[in-house]
Each structure stands twice: as C-alpha cells, then as structure tokens.
Length: 270
Image (cartoon, rainbow, N blue to C red):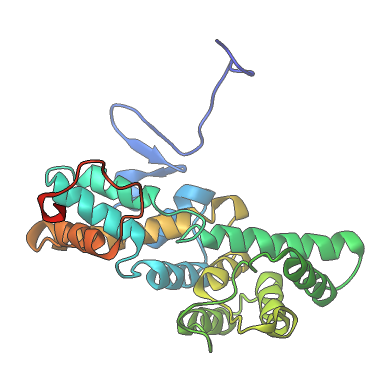
C-alpha cells in the first residue's frame, strides 16, 4: 500500500561512489576523518554545518553532564540483558536506550518543549516572558502538573550540574531567551508551587543547546548519544564483573507478593 507522495526521495546527509564517501558535502576520508572531533561531527551530521567554538563547547558540556547517572532503570535493564545474553551487546545497549523515556533522560525534551511553549505564549499574547511564565506556573499548580526542568529529589537546594551548565553558557556568551525563561521559571516556581523546585540538569541542557542554535526537534538526540557512552561503560564492566543477576536477586528480595495465595498448602502449614 502506498501512503503519501513517494515519487522521489532524497537525503542530504551522505552518499558514496566507487572512489569516495561524501558526508554533508565533505569528503569523509580527506576532510573529516582525523580532522574533526566527534562533537563537531555530531553537530555537522544533524544540522549540515560545523558548529562555532561556543556551540561545540556548549554541546560538549551537555554531553558530559548527562552521560553517566548511576544505576538508573535504563542502566539496570542494559546490565541485566547482558548478564542474560553475554554475546548481545547490541541488545543490551538497545535495552538501555529503550528505557530512556519521559522520566529519565527524555525529560530534557519535555523541558525544552515546555520552555518553547512559554516563549510562544508570551509572543502570542504580546506580553513578556515573566508574565507568561508566572501564568504557566499557576496553571501547573492548578492542574497538579510537574514543572518540566525544575525540581530534584536529591539536590533540593540546587542541581550542581545545572548551575555549571548555565555558568558555561554565560561565559560562552550564548545565553538567550531559553535560559532567561528557565531562570524566570526557577525564580518564581518555589513561591507559586510552594515547594523547593531548583533548576535541574534536564532543564539546563535544552535551555543551553537551544540558545546555542540546536533544533527543538533534535533535543532527544543529545541525552541518547550521551547515555550511549555511559551504557558502554556499564556494559564493559558488566562483561567482566557482572552484577546483573545480583540486581535481579535483590529485586526478588525487595518486592513482596500481594496476589492471591496458592490453593496448595505447603507442608509447613500442615
């Protein structure tokens, strides 16, 4: 079944012939391999142009900030998958990446879209960002919705990763309307929501890279790429010093059964 117009299809990313490989208009062997670092190449692949020095440094900082996050569910899924299938690194990596949803890592995309919504609302209403931000926070409170990009269960007095990223953005001179919006939300949220809501790293990452010129539609690529590095470390360690089945066993011990009892009585109950 044919759906939509499919007469001609195009890609502007890469092509090749018998003598060369071209990526974004550049010869892979002559102009890229050994001549470009990976963060620049990531930017080039996605956007079709190399980043400025400030854009590169900001992206680098964000990738470093989010690459490792301990034994979160996605990491546990990856390690337990490798423990069960030691030859399937690709399956274990996929398990970890598939576990990066709206709560872990995917929260950066949610925060970026929220910042964009506040900015768009201010522009549509012809008001300033602070007015739009306050109205949005009051709406979140009324609907009992979480404020994307704010709050942290451990760093209640401030997420040090977020603070560092925002400071780097200031130093690089790229702080713009997204960081301004995030800071306004962070300033007013505790009073309106009536609990500590510091800016977290999932809010700082999209604010910083959006102000640097990264597209909203590609935000999720950043934590995915970064966490692939962290997952690689966990899988390498898992291959030599496995804790996958230990975590599985601990889950059995930690979780109590509250379903229907078996009709069969154990000998001890006789």
